[in-house]
Image 1 (cartoon, rainbow, N blue to C red):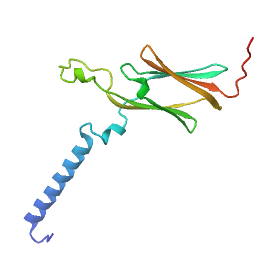
Image 2 (tube, rainbow, N blue to C red; image 1 turned 60 degrees about the vertical axis):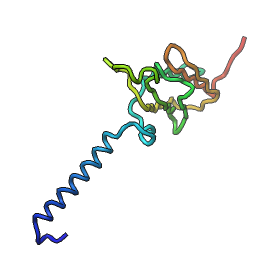
Image 3 (cartoon, rainbow, N blue to C red; image 1 turned 180 degrees about the vertical axis):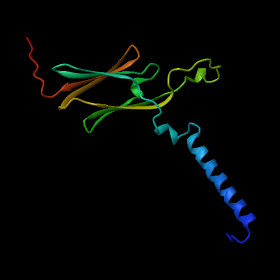
Image 4 (cartoon, helix red, strand yellow; image 1 turned 90 degrees about the vertical axis):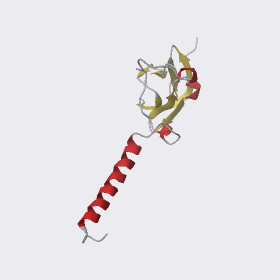
Length: 142
């Protein structure tokens, strides 16, 4: 743009800045859509326990269908990911308090060094329980 006409130049710069601010606002405050579902917004609390035979991971996930939770071992860590959403029947309800986090979650849990064999998972009392059997554990049966 020709800077000779400073009024036009300033107006053009102001419009560009407004457009940039709008793009930034849309990026930060975008509604939950298909693209944003992959971005985790919270981490569930976990307990990690170890015995001589296995490592147990308990993740507090009340209200989450544990069959829909992804669990992967990668680079010495267990990564669990999924989503908690309000049930459809409650989407039109008036919310007075909403303390349980909603949306996509992901948690990376560093595992004790070792090689793991059998992996089991189940739900109990609102928790996802994952057991990782140690491959080097010697099982002595009476």
